[in-house]
Figure (cartoon, helix red, strand yellow):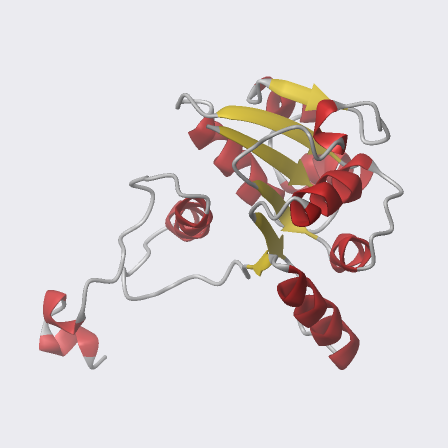
Length: 195
């Protein structure tokens, strides 16, 4: 299996890092692009370096390298995820403004009818944002907000991060044990469910 991963400049770089950490322990081939704002945010928000994040991927590409394999629709892969995805990046993808490799790779993913997941990290949203996200959905993209589920009673920040990453992996068709899926009310005691 082959997955394209992009980190754009939104807050929430830990989501992309955790996804890459998980995938680095599998036999999934990963192709990574990190935007300049994402590089800054990695250092602001986490204890990791961009070099460490790149070390988790099988292949890394410069943000402006339009000769990279992932810039072409002939490069076959099993899906692309932009995690986190800024509204700026989402808007550029929705309008095919291919001014960097992340947007170009997303654009060819859509045109080839492959799976594209945008983990949008922005709230609150105004009507312009909703129009952009609706346009992306119409084009075939999956919009996934990193919203935690509390039925599993997360105890730590890692539990919340892992839930989002586990759901993204599910959307990519990659089985994982990063989160506890909902299996019905009967799996929770009546007292816990009614709290």
